[in-house]
Length: 590
Image 1 (tube, rainbow, N blue to C red):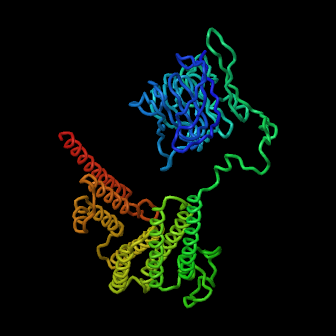
Image 2: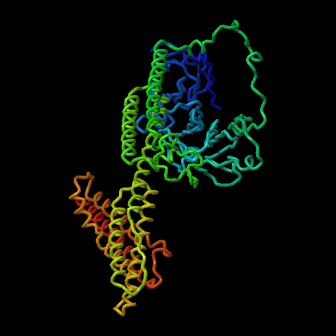
């Protein structure tokens, strides 16, 4: 039986720059027997708890930092593989979480492994792992703290280490167990000798009990070994109040405790708080001024309920309305130049706010709320700017569609030359409109869908006119082919596919100006992806078969077109793979 007794005279003792009187120690420690208590003075400042191994000590400081010293060859010091002997206390390194240091609130020690619980409810383990007691999914010893990933999705409120076994209690009252499971001692009700990952104790979970606390109790000695039992408390009484404890109300009423006196702010802390409040006031005043400017711009604001309805008065030709206009009316009737000017003003506000964010980020403390306010304002401006760009693009597309003036009426099929001329003139206007629609820049998916729909509508109209012209030829007993217009559409798509090649895009890329790529592999990857995107866009219209396909044309023609597109994409992927293989071979030779 090995026993170490600790008496901490003042866990909150503090002496500036000098080790405090940490704790008294006596009893059996490893191979040593300590009969006269001696005072440990190793750690500078306050400590909250300690764990003691065969030849080392780990102390939890008031700040939530763990320090260790002594000697241990299985990693319990937590200082790395090259520091198994540490004569003086050294901080145990934890991995940073969201660029913030880890704050430990509890530390537990088993036979040869250590568990640490953070204020965020996360569990770290290190040390010997022969039975899987670290819960990391393997049996490899760790010399530095490692996060137990299996419990990362839960908030753990308590950890317990018993010999080579580990337990964790979550905020939902569920107990997880892992480690050495000889004769089923973990309580998981299966016979796996080693459990390397945390597993829930299903019996307690299925019966719907909410565990409040875990306790480990010694229950006597058998054959020279101390037996231990784990207790999961379900129904617990409330903790004793201060007045019920020995020494209650020992100090005069109204007198501050040592802890309260310590929490009093220093002058430096007060100065930082007031500077933060003053900075918040200045930023809020600035954001308020910018918000008033946004409201004065008016464009890009959300639509009110009912703006999307089909009310004749709202959607009537009232382009002269300037007062009491809804957001939708402004989008429909205001001049495009005014919308473009509003977009530029939004961009200016975004730049100004982004500069403020970069400036405030350089400050160390008291800026989280300020950054939140500015970030929300920037996002709002970006959303309004995107809405304005979408409105401009949509209105320009609609203007191209409305620009196709005139009406084509085939009065009879006798004077076919005159009727054919009408159709050809109409086709010229349709082709011009198609070119304008295709060249129109669109900012988002919705405007892109509108652009494709208008282009598809014009394409269908051109095919109808071509079919009518073939019919006029047949009436005049001229050679005609009613399937020709539909085949012409397939031919145009086929030609478009032929014009898409990685080499041609590479030439356009060189003429378009410098773009930075880290290597030839990155450039080819970019070109292949762009080529595949263009191919998908060409054949995308054929996905709507009822609209895009003509019943006079055999389905095989359309299937061959799609097959050709897929083969071209496969060729692009093959070219990319060959280049990457050659690149790997060159690197291997070097």
